[in-house]
Image 1: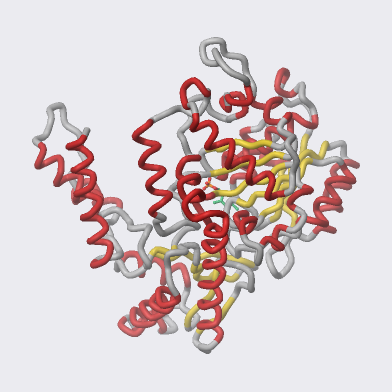
Image 2: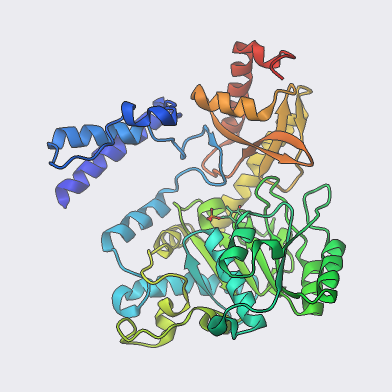
Length: 460
Ligand SMILES: *Cc1c(COP(=O)(O)O)cnc(C)c1O
């Protein structure tokens, strides 16, 4: 193992060096990937040198998500304290279902969940779990909502016509999960949004009333804290009033930006979160831990037990259920996603997490200020969002983003809202500085200058 760690160090150092000199990996068209790199598997072992070279080549050709040229998705950067925790989680290789198998690591998970619940403002009846991704924490919330309406569903299957409400701008996991949960994709009601991308509460109320009239059972309202394209925050307070009135489970999908909970300056964006029944966020997005680190918090932990507990004599042989989180989780064997969050939180403190969150809004402000000061740009998004959406010289965003990728300049994506398509610059990498954001715009402008056909009418 010690030799392997040496090898790891050597390869990791090489990666870090190359990230500096070459922050974007060379583009390899997917059709060429097996001809370009030695990925194939054989019957017989390869000698160490061949193995090492193949591995290095593979890594160096992999998209570099931690550099200052990656703005493509809702994660980025590399936080060394969190990486340390994740590497150690691999070394100790516990499974997070029982105290017997994971010991104090269960305490690590518990302390994070308890602390976050307290920050939300919930009492000790609250609880939570870690699941492999925000889609899955949303799924857990939907299952609890379903079972809270009718806990016989767990035994007999869904027989009533349940409905789910979410905005047109919400994440695609909602309809997918409705299919998984037996509720059905067609029972998802997409509520329109205002010009800021926020759900319109009066439209939600109308939709619920119409469904009740038609014999449906409204089961879940999903609000989004940071929509995937615009980074918009649904107003939680009016939604929570509607949910209270009609007795509907309210879940806040904060996968993207729910971590504003850690910021005194920005937590007003999720005002009313304490009124929700469940809340989820991805620490691998705004907090910047490695993937995946997804937390689900629930106001009344009884619902976790109701939906996820199962007896299993071969597994649960010791200790209280309270220290056997397998009883309240989606999976059986479970990776230790808590330790990386804990190593980060322990080392920088809650204040440090706040600084990480605030930094991203600062960077977004730098980007918006730049865009607003230059008439060649058109801005589509609003303050208090870390998704900065814009177009440059009316160049079609989709084509521009693809070319930037194929020419190994920048990784950035595009999005659409109200039939407009635009580039979406995500300032989620808190290791970036203001000059990295300006470097992004500079790279873009230089690229367009060098490829003047982009601004021709015919290209558009
Ligand atoms: C990213 C995201 C998800 C999904 O999270 P994964 O961890 O990728 O499964 C869900 N909802 C929103 C709003 C997101 O931005």
